[in-house]
Length: 266
Ligand SMILES: NC(=O)c1ccc[n+]([C@@H]2O[C@H](COP(=O)([O-])OP(=O)(O)OC[C@H]3O[C@@H](n4cnc5c(N)ncnc54)[C@H](OP(=O)(O)O)[C@@H]3O)[C@@H](O)[C@H]2O)c1
Image 1 (tube, rainbow, N blue to C red):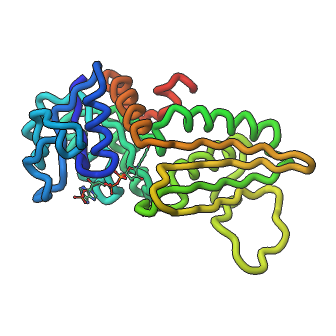
Image 2: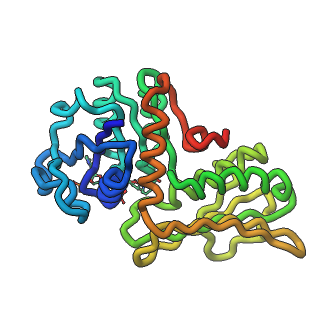
Image 3: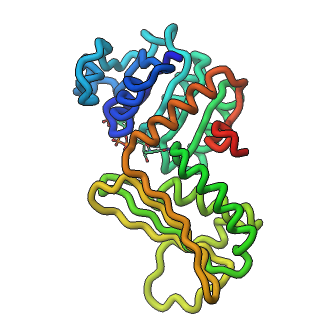
């Protein structure tokens, strides 16, 4: 598989370069950055701190369109439309990892997926996707009586909150219980909050240091509580998952897929 990445100079872009370097099944043929970026022309291996590779950073995706089987996009929401438009115009499957999307940005994915195959996941780690499955199972057994809380910790540079993964956890639980997350979610508490209603999912966010990503869901009943926690210790876990998704999606028909489908969990 020959692939290209949007946002090659970002934190995720750099570990994606490293993941491609380690992969025997996937080759990086386009490392794209914003037009006029300071990183233009740099060797991608040097950008990722793994030594020279011979491929240079570019802002001209069209130059590589003929070689690319699939694109990977870990940028910021404001870049999504341009990246999707390019993939649709060139008929390229795409793996999207960008989080913090608004509802209208999510609808861009649905529209583009009418023409090209897209995998979208708020978290590409295998462990988090297993966690989403375990949350559905736990919600079925404990959700009608337990108090449910979700908290997450990320590094100081993260710009959206709660994390896309925390939201996906809330959605997995709410969907299982047939609750509307818009109605039952509470984002932080302060002051005289009154007693906690049972039909509520509380979210709490911590931003600190260089934490790659930690998520916990708590199901607290009378006399016992169950905590399900995932801790990511390296961004490589997301990059490897994205490569796995790219290999899976490259020959799929147009449509919007998720990581659960990539892993055969759904
Ligand atoms: N799904 C997952 O598993 C997962 C895991 C980790 C992170 N993420 C998400 O992935 C995204 C990237 O994370 P990160 O830590 O790599 O962020 P980052 O270090 O800030 O990198 C963002 C990248 O996007 C580019 N970019 C920003 N705005 C742009 C625009 N308007 N047009 C074109 N390019 C633009 C940046 O280019 P410049 O430097 O030129 O601005 C940079 O290359 C975030 O949404 C993050 O939450 C998802």
